[in-house]
Amino acid sequence: DSNYGIWYSTPDIDIPDFTNTVTFENNVANIAISGGTTYTHTWAANTYAVLGNIRIYNGTLTLSPGTVLKFTEGAYPYVDYYANLIAEGTATQPITFTSLNGEAGGWQGFCFYDNSDYNSSSSLRYCVVENAVTNLYCEYTNQPSVMYSTFQNATDHNVYLYQSSISLEGCTLKNAPRGLSVDYYSQPTIVSTTFENHSEACVRFYSSNNTSVTYANCTLKDSNYGIWYSTPDIDIPDF
Image (tube, rainbow, N blue to C red; front, side, top):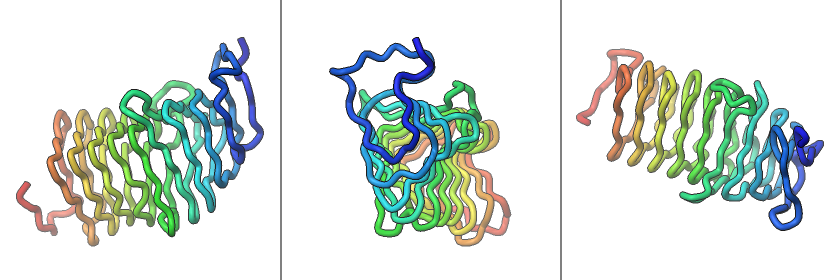
């Protein structure tokens, strides 16, 4: 009957599995975490309120299947230099990233920055990323690798790439103005992925400078446009 059961002052900590030792009955989340920098740690499955920006730096943050992270308004976790995020859920125990207030646009979204791909390999598997302004933003990186995940209910972009060439496989992007936004020297590979219910476009190009998408067995549906190019000065392939 409290807002939080346990409140950690820093994210730079291992969080154990309390399943057999603690009964949580709280109003907001079982565990609260203040913002800050984290290095190499593992967080066991639980429901977390993240109350500030989290920087993953020069280490690996591993999230256990079934983890739910709820981010306060304006918060954005970001993967920085030489860092990894391993968020690998299962079909029955996905890992969820969402807003603390339960509203679309209630947090900024996940960010992968320059050098997050330097000797690093981040992985999102069976994740649900939702209710952010931009659910996943990548800049100057080829990480993360994303499989079997859902991006939904963003108020701007589900996934935005700037000079980034990530891979999406077996994913669903839905319920946002734009599904995949591709900008400046980005060349993602999209396999067996479904885009649906985007009010502007499933795939939106913002630049023609060495920008392309490789598709395989994808479905783009129930949106105003499937693909929107920023210029007519482009070769358009046979889909």
